[in-house]
Amino acid sequence: MTTTAPADQRTPAVLAAGTRLGVGLVLGGQLAQQVGAAVATGLFDRVGAVGAVGLRLGLSAVVLLALCRPSLRAVRRGGWPVVVGYGGALAGMNVLFYEAIARLPLGTAVTLEILGPLALSVLTSRRWLSVLWAALALTGVVLLGHGGLADLDAVGVGCALGAGVLWACYILTAQRSATTLAGLDGLALALAVGAVAVAPLSLAAAGSALFSPAVLAAGAAVAALSSLLPYALEAISLRRLPSSTFAVLMSLAPAVAAGTGAVLLGQRLAPVGALAIACVVAASAGAVATSVRRPRHDRP
Image 1 (cartoon, rainbow, N blue to C red):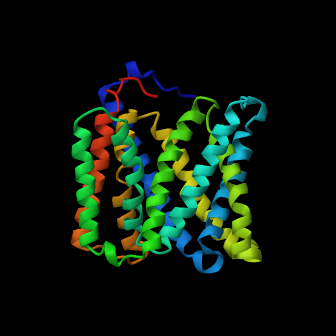
Image 2: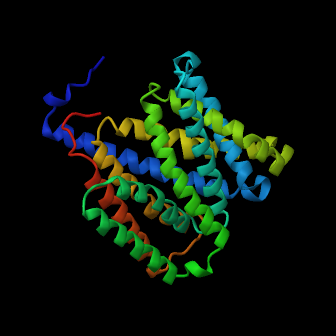
Image 3: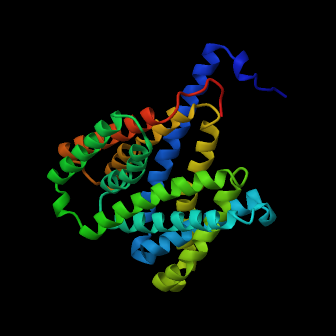
């Protein structure tokens, strides 16, 4: 059986290969997540956006609970409010995002949604460059409007922005949960909380259609692509990349979403829209790159 050499004994070539692999895993996880979102749009006519969210969260929760088997005793007395908040943010974020992509192109929805974490990064940074990143993001939104934002569905725009706010809340509660529970236990419990919260709405929206074999199969694919596979790839990549590099790569989500929407859903992107997405991606990447501490040489 082979063993992996400690990070300080690895050659530069081995470290470079590990970095390339980590970058590939992050991008692969993003692609899987956006493909899952594209697949989910095919469920909207059958079970609605809320029904699709219920399937995704419920099936993901079942798998992660079976794999992690989190101990309820491990949740400290003060930990349950964090887990419930974590699950509530996760459920609300997904419901609003799916309602957004039911009304907006995938790339546009993700571009508006990422403004939430971008705002969080800018507000928590104490560097003057944060003003530059905020201005660049605002430029992207203005360009997006010039490309037809006013003609987009107002409810969809509101849902995408609301999903961005809850994405920021999700980040904060996920970080808090990580200090309370080990591994993916917090995520497994949060998914279970979110699934329970969304279940009544899903059943009211879709009824028995949720349990048809075709819908369950599509729901399983969405759960695997949008939740399980990205989480696994991200966990592996974090062992090979500094957290700062990982955060910058996550900022590419709008570009990945726009490409996925163009290829799988036929959602053409105008040049102005592409420039708008590029501005938001650059602003997000710049904000996280300048707000994190200097990365350590050891791997997380």
